[in-house]
Amino acid sequence: MTTLVLGAGVIGVTTAYYLARTGQKVIVVERQPGPALETSFANGGQISACHTEPWATPATLPKVIKWLGRDDAPLKFRLKADPALWSWCLKFLVNCTENRANTNIERMLRIALYSRDSLAELRRETGIEYDQLSKGILHVYRDERELKVAERRAKAMNELGLARHALDVAACVALEPALGRAANGNHLCGGLYTPGDESGDAHAFTTALASLATELGVEFQYDCPISRLIIRNGQFTGIETPKGIFEAKACVVALGSYSPLLLKPHGIHLPVYPAKGYSVTLAVENLKEAPSVSLIQDELKLVYSRLGNRLRIAGTAEIAGYDDQIDEKRAGYILRAALELFPDCANPETAEFWAGLRPKTPDSVPVLGPTKIENLFLNTGHGTLGWTMACGSGKVLADLISGKQPAIDLKGLKI
Image (cartoon, rainbow, N blue to C red; front, top):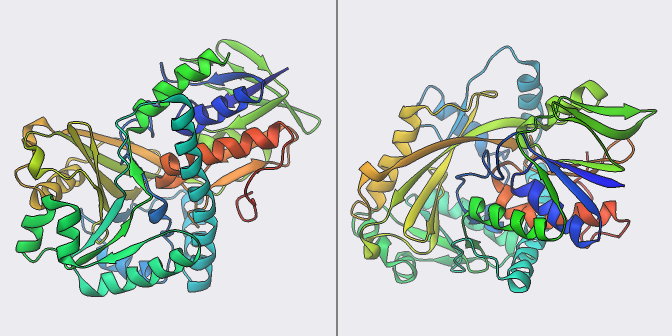
């Protein structure tokens, strides 16, 4: 019998690939005409175990209040009469305590580190290419108070196995010379460097991995929206689509923000809500003025990734439902911030804007594993870290479905 994977983003395709390596017959069902055309298309491009601090922390609430009404707010709530949104917000508030934040960091970091190692192993085994750079990730700060708070979080992550180092301004510039202008303009007070993290094009990776999966026998059904799940006597048996019914022995739901909509009719209330994020991609014209080390401007919640001769800048979050349209003001804010930091690296006329929906849980922890419906599994809720956590999450699901014990503890990662 067949295993179905619903969704051909980076999460779905990695799941299908690892399932195929166990010898299973796999069919991937995707509504788009190809892989990685939604959330995985133009994301921030970082494999960032260092970014596993949850959104819900004690420090978040005063910032959200300060950001109210600002078009350039890193985190913006567009409140509406949506019960799912209000339920999500209440659960978010519950997680804004120090104890909860520390617990959630450990859970996120557990899957992120496993996934980072799994990606490196996959790259060694296959030679897959995706504009990958293994130069680490540098968090940069312009506010001493923010840096001190971040250093405390970094210390906790170090104790959990993630190597992070505090750098002064001179060390930041030595690591990434393109930051020299920011340092001279007093826009930099220090940073935190994570040497084991990396960057790469998630869309290119997913497309290449889909080809490798096809070679292993995986079948991709594109242009195939899913109408409903077919459940009989508490057991998954198939899906209904415009192309007909696909029957299977097991199914992995990897539909990102759309996962709850498919599951709700069956009594599975998944705590996932879409968080719209933006990216800007620039064609690099002055190589010396563009960063080659992947960066995170922590106060602005912006990430920078060098993808070949392109510079990808991504960030901000809008809790606004399923609206994926580009807000020109918010996209323009990202471009202005990038050109303020690296004014001579690219012509702004080359800017390509994108927006996508990240599947966010209130505690920022993904949801992996079985459901109350027999043979129905979840691999969703990764938020802004889908690319970071993809390979590890895919391996976990492949192990569970093939009857193997996953290599990591899944405590706190299940529904």
